[in-house]
Length: 93
Image 1 (cartoon, rainbow, N blue to C red):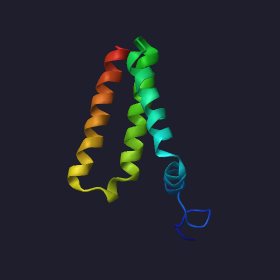
Image 2: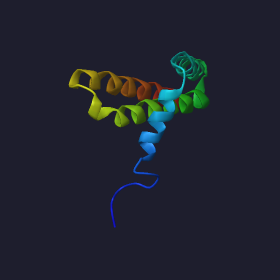
Image 3: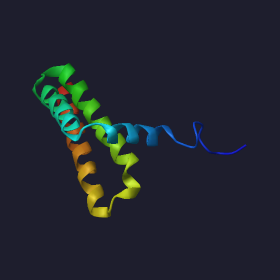
């Protein structure tokens, strides 16, 4: 048995990145901006959950692109994840 993923050797992560790369960049930006604004301005538990979802999404894309980033480029996504997590925890408590 081999350790290669099914579907022609592509992993789910690489398929996800390829799908996101095909999306128009302004649409992705506006979608993330809309989610962030709704998450930040929604009070209480729903806002905390949305902010947590945003933190998980940023963390997932940081992990998927980690090996292609320099050390300096790795710091910003980590900082964003930490800040979003603190905001989410504050809204949930």
